[in-house]
Length: 431
Image 1 (cartoon, rainbow, N blue to C red):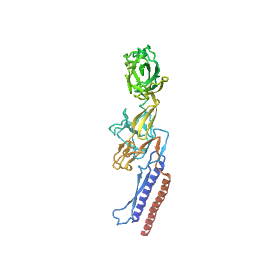
Image 2: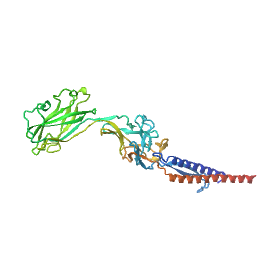
Image 3: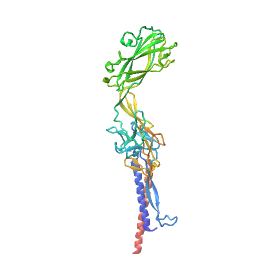
Image 4: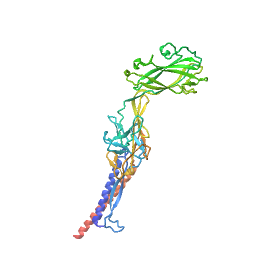
């Protein structure tokens, strides 16, 4: 190796160690960056083309930074339900603009918070992408049909009643009445032996009262009436005394229900002036031969329990995200609604991704294209709510790297100065 060659090798060492120092300093600077993947310096030998076999006396060096993207960081608990982490493989799909769903980036930095428009955005300014769900909770058939996850479009939710179940006892020793005709209890010509009010909910989140009345008409036989107890102006005028259902109930000799078995179809005939459509409700009085609904025993008539589904209007109170990536809105009336599902993007070679500012990545030829998977499926990890992934940087390792890098840099500098001194000696010999 010539003196100039030795000097150039020393310069190559200086450049390589400078690159290593840059990598270590970037790691240290990002020790608290959410989802950051620490890099390491990889050194490679450079040989000239005319080197003899096994001759590395004039070998140079080059340093490259290799980011360990697949390394899992520690998940730390937070207080925000929109802070998300991934346990296992994969990345969140994000975009740089809320209305841009085609240019995709990928990140493990899941510190998402709603902006002024309700769009979930992390601290680097990337918007979380998800599959919008239909009313049944199904994701789109086109898995590439992603939109920005937005929680600002929901103000509240109501749910109309569709099912009512009654569990009550009608006293068997009650005296039977004669001459009863359907509607007599609502008209006031026959006094009910037992009556209870049931509150149901309409499609606009309002409460609507119903009266369910019973009168004994024979041995093991009762008649019932369901009367709408609200404002008669809400109805379409097709009912008399607001009676919306009536019929007979019979019992077995052991006090269990004989007929009807199962649910009765009851319709509240709301009129156009109410702003509501006619509402169909299943009224479940129990099963034949069972005591899970109406019974007839010789004890005081009483309502044991009632079960009414539906709910009044409730305001949005919060957002939850489950392990499968479902984003659900929670309401003050106890209802919840799945509105999005967060996909998890996986790659054949995730370590080949290209890094961009904001602790995100883009796909390239080395990484392969993204596969959009549901969480916990297809090799994708599960989504963790109220958690953030810590940086994978280990300070002790980085400080050690700083020491070895500094020593190597000083040694490379000494090679340069030594070669320079030897050249100076050579120049003196010439003169």
